[in-house]
Length: 318
Image (cartoon, rainbow, N blue to C red):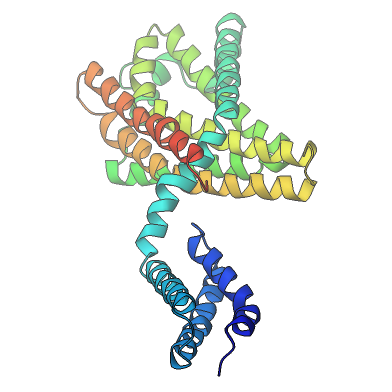
């Protein structure tokens, strides 16, 4: 006859572990394997307890445990979409939200550099020539000039794909060179210089309004994505330099994981920015409509980071 006390002593640790895994919200691959293995073991123990007519309380407890574990395994096996959903509405936006302060700092520094470049070009003799080369002011900034033609000289689909690839590459450079700090800062600095130089030349031609009407519809979202990529990259660099009370390896691993999530999350937003640049920026739509569409594109990123990301950061298990 099966001794209930010995049975509980012999297998109690397995039951406790199975109960803990069943209740755990997120499981790693090895934990899923462990859950399945323990489920099989405890199911066999339940069958043995029933055959031996063990006391009703123990049999009921085991039956409940096995039933709960079966439901958990079913959710794990059928939970691919749940996993993807959690990744999209919890992991990625939480990583973006955690970089929000760095994001603001990078954006401010970038815009200050761009403004400084613009002021320098407008106030320094010869700076305009350095900015546009051998082209005349009219060739570059005049109606139908190089600045405007850039957005419409190629088919929109081809241009959009090119822009998406280029912007994603800039984002990748700003992010994944961030661990070295200087290369990431240089990528951001050179892009800020280019923006400031273009703005200054357009201003000198008396067409600063055209500059903003062409830059802002897609640039609001595009630049915000680049700022966020740079912010995540620089966080990695600072984690390596100043890990705080953690080991340098642990700090860098955490920042690297967060940076990778940010990189994945920015892919669709870079795509949206490229679509706006290819189809909205050079379109014949009224300027107000183009600006509104650009603002709507930016609002999607802002809502994803500050609404979804904040909620994900505050939720248990995030």
